[in-house]
Length: 375
Image (tube, rainbow, N blue to C red; front, top):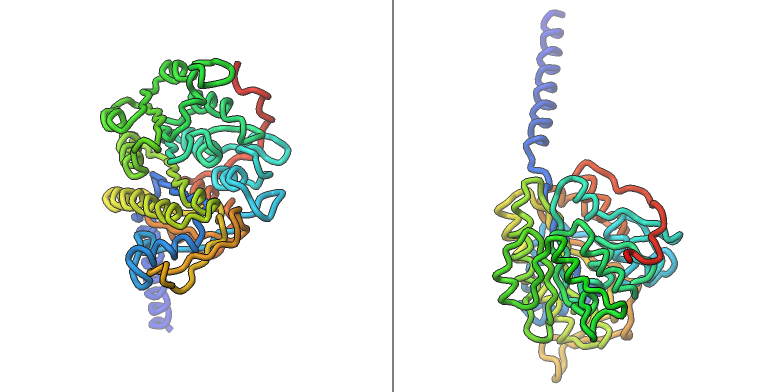
């Protein structure tokens, strides 16, 4: 009897030690302090497959293929099976569905808190960069709240009054008081400088920029900076904050290529995303406290990959049309918490998972935004 009791106590002690070791192991894992969210606008699985076939070949690997965690994402909006970038971006920024055309307001037009705003509440720095206008739907959903994506002058005002530390893209006309600028004549660039932004207009100025806040307004048609260069600069600026950072980087070209059924443009967009992703993964591998997530807001064009023909030595692209589709898109993840992105998700899950890794939840809708953001 005595030996049986002793055996039981030994087993209990061993089980207790195993539990303690498990807790210590879990606590020892690095937590996600920084988030790099990379969005390929309109980048469906067809575009990724095409980029693989055109690049390393059907049996080769993209940078995306090296990421250890993958999943699928549903993209429908609150009012349509086929979303637009405003509604899908709102889902990715706030964890809530909204109607097509809305920027981080719910279907009742009430303000939805964003993951970028949550980062600010936690003392983290934040940035949004894009190869599109910085006031376009995908970047705007992270810092602005308006009932229509078309209100880009209001969105520009909200940007310079927001907590965003780094914002880069095109769209100077929405900030400038020049005759070919804003309809209301406001000099939003002066307001930006007054709020501590260094304003940058070209690649040399991007390289030289050293302020704590950076507003880049580039012309990508004139050999403006690459997405990779913008992301490297942004990470370098935001990583100075010991509390961490959140950055969203968007490649807009897969969407533009899909709308035009232009395979070369779509491939260029995936490739520029790949270059930026390589930069993000290098940083994350060194830092070990950075989660990198790559996804798309929706698919555009219904691109399918077919066998090659005499005109297409790698593959033949086939398109459904020049519009968005309701197809699911992929999500890829690397870093602390990456495992949470396996399986099939709704697009609203993405920011909720990120918030949970910070030990927080995204808030509920608040009051409607004013008819104009600022006077």
